[in-house]
Amino acid sequence: MSLAYLIKRLLMAIPTLFGVAIVVFVLLRVVPGDPIAMMIPPGARAEDIEHLRALYGLDKPILVQFGHWLVDMIGGNFGTSISLRQSVLGLVASRLPATLELSLTAILLATSLGIALGIAATYWRGRWPETLVDLVAGLAMAIPDFLWGLLFILGLGVLLPILPISGRLDPRLETDFTTNFYLIESILRGEFAITLSILTHLVLPAVALALPLTAAVTRILKSALKEAMSQDYILMARAKGFSKARIIWREAFRNALVPTVTLSGVQLTFLVGGTVLIERIFSYPGIGNMAIGAVIDRDLPLIQGLVLTFAVLFIALNLVIDMTYVLLNPRVRHG
Image (cartoon, rainbow, N blue to C red; front, side):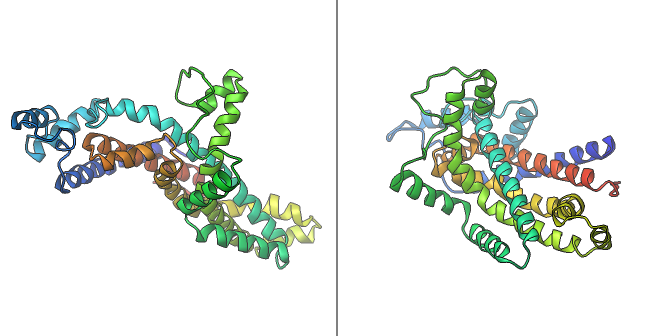
């Protein structure tokens, strides 16, 4: 992949982010409800209300507000949260690592299981393992991630309480993290008791997020392998006496990865968006959970910062998918 292509994609992200900024800024200000009214006690004086409006810049015309916010944002100042009275950038930075750990764990689980099930269904095509894989994939896709989360909480958190159903770390384990990437830092420090606690808290939300994506990867890969297995080079490999496992893994799988990556990339974006509900259900301290709280409190600066953060994550994820596609298929050339 050429450097020019990467630069082109990054430059294309600028108008996308600008459009997202305009949409979210305008929508938040035309929706009924006054965020300042939520901050003040009943019977507050009119001058106190106006002082708060001026403090957060809500007393100016929308175009002026947008201009000030855009200039501040370019300079790295995303404003101050109305409800939490803290820097929006600091709040997002403190919660983003938790969401990244959850999302990456779910993606790793989904792709690993999806590839394994897709290959298994292809190897035992026309036999009962393929039927079982189809049933499992159908069930996993039919139930949305948030409903899987509720079922896990009920089954493995309440009826059979074997896994934690809230939080990110056992509060009884005291440690002083230098960064907010708890999982990576605990591994690097060799604090495996903390690592185990983090992983046990990750299991249920990550699996709930991963199951629908696992089903999508399984079906896409199975279909791509089926098409690949009918190609001439597969017939040639069979004529040479190669084993079925070698033909699937070393010959067909490589070519089936290209459409699998392309179509699965769309599903990955839904996974990142799905963290919002999953984090809320499991009280997981990520930006998704924070986003719901910000909407409830109508915290305009925090909502704006979080929406832009999600937009950046979507753009970065799509860029990674495109890069992976080109690496797997070097015949593709981008202008």
